[in-house]
Image (cartoon, rainbow, N blue to C red):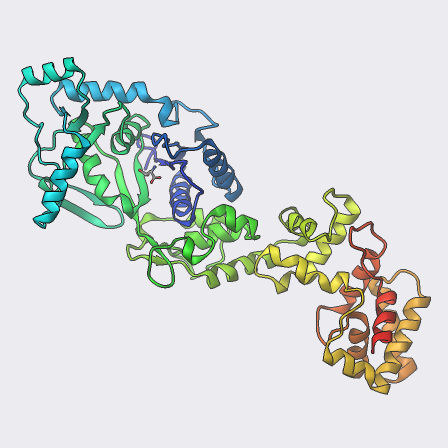
Amino acid sequence: MNSENPIRVRFAPSPTGFLHVGNVRTALFNWLLAGRHGGTFVLRIEDTDAARSETRFERQLVEDLSWLGLDWSEGIDRGGEYGPYRQTDRYDLYRRYAARLLDEDRAYRCFCSAAELEETRRLQLERRETPRYAGTCRRLPPDEIRERVGRGDPFTLRLRVRPGCVGFDDLVFGRIEIETSQVSDPVLVRSDGSPTYNFCCVVDDLLMRISHVVRGDGHLSNTHRQVLIYEALSAEPPRFAHLSTILGPDGQKLSKRHGATSIEDFRRRGYLPEALVNYLALLGWSPPEDGREVLALDEIREQFDLGRVQKSPAIFDTAKLDWMNRTWIHRIPGTELLGAARPHFTAAGLLPAESSPALDAWAGRVIDLVKTRVDHLDQLPEAAEVVYGADPPALDADARAALAAPEGREVALDFVRRVEAGGALTPEGYRRIVGEVKSATGRKGRHLYHPIRAVLTGQGSGPDLETLAPLCDEGARLPLPRPVLSPAARARRILEAV
Ligand code: GLU
């Protein structure tokens, strides 16, 4: 990990769908490893599956990574010394390496048709054997090969796997070794000339000088094949670290069945990037210091260490993610949350689409007032109802009882008269009026505040009135798509409704 051996890691998604929790955690751990050691985080796009790759998914994943703060200094959209960084732009390179392996007899042409391979597989399964390539074309006589190539018979290119053992020291799972007889000679190039994942991945990791491959443990069996490909290319493989699968609370592999899993879903529902990366970092890794769990990305980066990545599967726990999100929502000021919260407010018809300094400052304070009641930002409009006020106002039983009692009604009436007579209801104005009501009625404590709350909000409990009342007063004078009832107007209607 010095300057002669710099850490170079990559995130290599296939743009075949939305980024989900699992691959974002992979991106995150790579980013953390690079950041911790002053290394380079490369973004490479593995788009060789032409039928399933789509540019909209590539655009989306670029947006997701940027939103999460997982920036890359080399790769697509950035360039770099070892580009291009999209596999479909690298076919010449793969062809060159394929030709070299064929030339050195490390790979061979396989003329077996899909139907033949399927038939062998069926028979092997019938005999309860592990399906593997039978080696039919491993030793075809050169004449026959020449003839079939001349005839235009389609063929794939397969790696000639050597006998013996193949293994690697995984930084998470330890030494993993298998008999190569368990590995079918992997296809490097398909009969349509397209290179396969295992082959492209090795060529790219090699040419891009990747030092550490950090990826999901679903790739463990590929890694053996890849190590054999490195060997055939007489190259040293990178270090490998496989991350355990993320499971749902039911112990099954995390999937859509467990609710939102794509980053796009989480963003739309108002999860904060700070909370997501914080939560995902703790899925399979634990901080060494003082057990503190709420950590900003740069704090995690300072502490990150592959040695503390666990090999047992991590369980995705929505309740904990919600707690984490709540915690981050509390930490971040309302005006900063507004950017992400605005679409929710506009969709609910509570804020105009265009912003203005006065509106934004007010909306930021509304968020600060009600954010303690939400797990994610899409719940803010509902929580903000307490500021907007229903028209006619809804009264709960508690408020109704407080206002039906003669003493309570007296306090409420006195309060409303003073609010109506006063000018703008500032926090100081509110405090002054409450003081006056107290002297005029001789009520104090709950007997004073409860009716005031009831007449202002129609509820028996709710947020701090000294903040709420001035916010409603100010809101009533702002050009909002759904008008806010002024405290005086709302109180009048509430009194009429009792
Ligand atoms: N494109 C592969 C995937 O998305 C990358 C695997 C790897 O990191 O080697 O699973």
